[in-house]
Length: 587
Image (cartoon, rainbow, N blue to C red; front, top):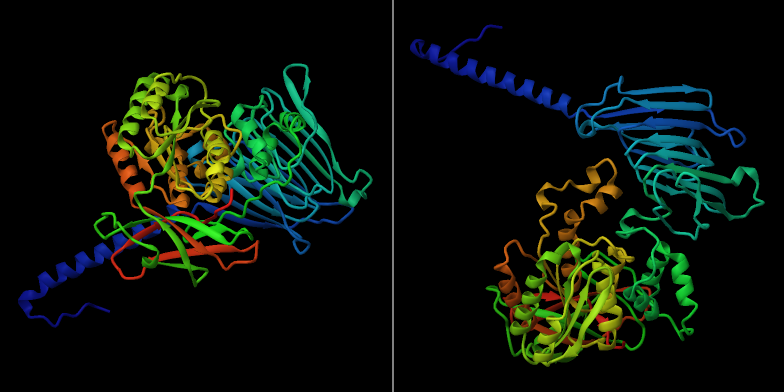
């Protein structure tokens, strides 16, 4: 059909040119969209038929030298193999992933590509399948009710999570000392000729029927082996080493969650040290950690008196002073609770200054000393200050005191050097230094580059202890400059997320610092210039001076429940209130 114009004769060329331009633009847009869709078509899926039975389970063989592999055994309903191949770079074609299914065997061969165009595989396989996986530097994850799993990598992390009712296992390192993390206790490390190491043994029923047995055979040149654990719970250093004083103090504290985290890294040393300690009357326990979109805190049955910090400011960020108990309304799980006491903002705090003097900041020791002295000048003379320095272990520079002259002299004696055990130092502070002050006004100011590389305790365990402590945490992180934050890759997108997470330490320091501040009611201060440090000190002190400590009667009786606490002012609508977790007033 020809184009017909109703315009005057003289306007036709202009109208035609306009229509032509619009038509051309539309065509170009469609072409771009199609090209874009083709460029981003980076996922390939396949369904593969395979025969499988209890006596003759399916066998799946996978070779992917340049990417990651995830294998998940499904439930009894699954009969075939579902394959998904993904790439964050170039699109995935049929030629990139060669598959062959014959009878009870499926083989998958992935074409080798550059890392930025690598292909990652995810396979859903029938239960009781036998799996053989080989990669280079790519991470491998095998989980579910498999009958046999054999994995070979060069540097890639291997994570396995299989039934342990009747398990035989062999973990081997061909070119490095063992680095592993296990939910269950494994056998002793055996060293073989040529610098090879092995951990092997059996778990569960040795006489179980053949149909229920599981075999796990993991081999790597230099990779990490994770057995039955969440990668996020892996500490910075998996090498077996003697306990530090911080670790011993954590064990003495009776905090079972932290003790268990240390035990997973060095079970022999924990067992030997625990055997030298007198039996405890009762071990304290921790509740479950919840993400802080609302303030959620663990519940204790007795006594039902809870305490929390509330920083109160107006809409301009200025502190609101001289509030009393009748000015606050506290809601727990939606119900208003009686406020029994409010400590004023001018009430002194117990502040721990946690100083990183590890090798990562050794050349800046003079700066650390000066920074500590400047902090002492900034806080209120009535505040009680304790100073703890840390490298691969902690050093108690000074216990709580208001004697500034003593603190100044102690700061000048601080030494530097060694690795960085930030999470151990923070855990020590919570269970050793602050535990006797449970229910009092407490805060921890951390001066560090945030790069933990030696702790026994992983960050999630420390985060849970922070929630339990009720202390305000103020991380002041001065970047080391070794790994620029904006240049570090997102660990989740790399060839081996676990390896990347613990090699590009600075990339996670800011994330961890924000979490520490958020769950505790504190504030994170990223220090990008040295002249920002004093300003951060001033703001920390100002934040502490806006903090009321509120005590209220709790109605919760279920020890497995959690408290959702909300606080507002009775007669003001212009207040901004930031809360710490509520904790019981008993140590």
